[in-house]
Amino acid sequence: MARILLTGGAGYIGSHTHVALRAAGYDVTILDDFSNSDPGVAERLERLTGGPVDLVTGSVLDRALLDRMFAETAFDGVVHFAARKAVGESVAKPLDYFETNIGGLLTLTQAMKAAGVWRIVFSSTATVYGEPEVFPLTEDMPLSHTSPYAFTKLTCEQILGQAAAADPWAVGILRYFNPVGAHPSGLIGEDPRGIPDNLMPYIAKVALGELERLQVHGNDYDTPDGTCWRDYIHVMDLAQAHVLSLNALMEGRGHVLNIGTGRPVSVLEMHAAYQDVVGRELPHVIGPRRPGDVPRLYADPARARDELGFEAEYGLRDMCQSSWDWVQAQSAGWRFNS
Ligand code: WQD
Image 1 (cartoon, rainbow, N blue to C red):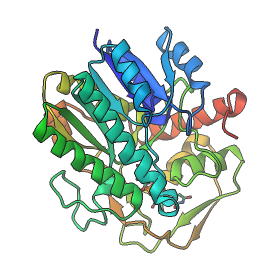
Image 2 (image 1 turned 30 degrees about the vertical axis):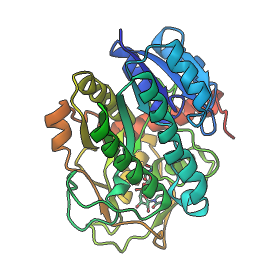
Image 3 (image 1 turned 180 degrees about the vertical axis):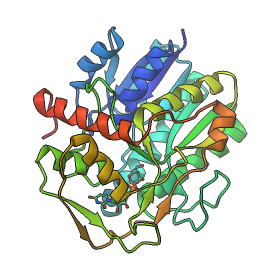
């Protein structure tokens, strides 16, 4: 039974990946400092997986803790989620992002090397494509960064690439597009603190009545309905992609892959789909463009299909329904981040 260390495993994508890894027969240890997740998720993960959750509270910046963990447990690989991930915040606090995201990866990989653990799945992002002009996006397209956050992810990709030239690393780099939705049980999901920046959690709070209306950030883009296209992918599909990535690394097959559906959806289409699920009008207004937004961002998912056998299964309605079920369940009983 291979054992995997899941850094940031109590977070949104990490918790869903925990469930998927356990279902695939992996043993999992979560390391999380709960800087952007709630400790209450552990109890709900136990309900979902039907067994105890092995969880260590701590930071990937804590080398001594990592050394102890690798000395005590023979890990077969690591899935590295623990990082700061808010684009806007990274502009205001670049050094914090460099410390956590780049410093965290360096501390983790040094501890892994010392312990002879060479398999790592790295959580990357489509924003490493900068402001692309050609679509759909393939993995060989030019990379750039338009924020300190994107800079950290691009730098980490390059660190891992160069490390693999010197030591026997097996590296899986997954470039997420727009993760949305929640586990169909309603027990785990996205739990942003404060007013959400991202589209779906914002619409969800409008549906709950916690926010008055959705402001659409611009409808004068070069798209059919004037609002930006994104490649939204259900978090359950994204979690399964991590299982397939680990399976490939266990066979020594490294990869750099887009994880998306290849099917772009506009802001207004997402709003309409969520409205259909909720069954009533969700107020919205057209506002000005948001600085930094690009008109289109969607994947060519072919390489993930060819190299991992990955194909997204969930559709837009599933994404909206699972989000709506989750936020209702959360407001009914497990609000931890007010
Ligand atoms: C999607 C679309 C907005 C909110 C970001 C990060 C990316 C990744 C995912 C970390 C855009 C529009 C949004 C609102 C709106 N995070 N929108 N009203 O910007 O594509 O990606 O989150 O890896 O790195 O950049 O996602 O959900 O913020 O925006 O009109 O209240 O929805 O303008 O067109 P984005 P998003």
